[in-house]
Amino acid sequence: MNRSGVVDLPLHGGTAPYWLVKRMKGLAHALFEPIIDEYGVDGAIEKLADPLWFQSLSCALAYDWHSSGTTTVVCGVLKSVINPEEFGIGIAGGKGKASRNTLSDIDGIGEKLRLSDGKIEELKYASRLSAKVDNACIQDGYQLYHHSMVVSEKGEWAVIQQGMNPRDRYARRYHWLSSSVKKYVEEPHQGIVGVLHENVLDMTSKESRGCRGMSVDLATTEPGELERLYKSLGGSGNKGKRMKEGQRTLFDFDKLLKGTVKVEDEMSRELIYRLPKRVNWDALRVTYDKQPDNYEQFLCIRGVGPATVRALALISDLIYGEKPSWRDPVKFSFAFGGKDGVPYPVDRRTMDETTEILSNAVKEAKARIKNIC
Image (cartoon, rainbow, N blue to C red):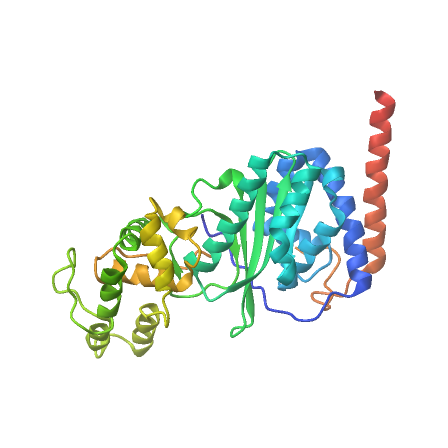
C-alpha cells in the first residue's frame, strides 16, 4: 500500500441537521443510479473502497471534508437509500450499536441478493476478520466504533470502518476491497485515512512477516513456558532455546539508552516496548489446544486481542530477534460547502437543483433506451 497523502479527521460530536441529511439522501440516490449504470455493482464498490473517492463523495454530498462524520453520516445515508433489490448492492452495519448488527444485516442482504449460504458465511468471516485486524494488528491508538460492509449481488465486498482516539480527538478510517485482499494479515488495505503517528505496531506489514511467523510458533508453545518468557522481559534473566546471545531485557533498554540518545527518543523507545498490563493467558491456552497453522487462524481464536498480539510481538522481537514494523500504515474537493460553514455554508438551492438535474437525466436516459429497444 503506497502513501499518497494525509487527510485529518477530527472527532466531531452532535448529529447532522435534518435539512442536510434529507438533501444528502436525495443526492446520494441520484448519484448512484448513473454510477451503477456506468460502472456496474463491482465498480461502485471499488469506488467506495477508495479512501480519496469516498472523501470526495462526502464533499459532493455537502458534508464536512475532514470530519469523523465523513464516515459515519455518509455510510448511514448510503445505507438508507441504497436498496439491494434496486441497486444490486447493500450496506450492512454502521456506527455504534448498528455495527453489532452487521452479521444479521449480511443475512438480510444475502437473502435479497440471492447469495448462497456459503457466500454469506464468507462475507461474515471477512467482516469479523477485517475488524479484528484493524483493532488488534494495527495498534495505532484508535478503537473501532464504526463498521460498514458493502456487498454486491456478485458476492464482492468492501469494508469501511473507523476508529476513534479520544485523547487526541481524531478519527481514522480503514478501507478494504475484496478483490484486492490477497492475505487478510498482510497489507490488505486499499487505504487508511488519518493523522500520521510515530511508533505504530503494524503486524500487517511485509516487514512483520517474520514476527508473525514467530508469534504463531510462540502461541503454539506450552503456555507455562510462554508465560515464563514473557515475564523474563520484565527484568529477570532471559533463558530460552533460540534466545540470542547477550539478549537484553526491557530494563536493560532503559539503561542502554541513557546518555546515548535524545530524551524524546528514549521516551519513544520506552513507549514502543511498553508491556501490556494484562495478557489473556486463557486465550493462549485455547490457542495451544487448537494449534493454528498460520497467523490468520491465530487471530480467529476468541479472546486473542491487542494485548496478546503485542505480547507475542515483543517476545518475538526482544528475545528471538524477529522484529515487527513500527511504521504507521496510514495512507493518504468541495461541491456544495460544509455544514459547519467550511470552506463556505451549504448552498441549499444549488444542491437541490443538482439533485433534480441528475434524477431527470437518469429518467430521460432510461426512457430513450426503452424507446430504442
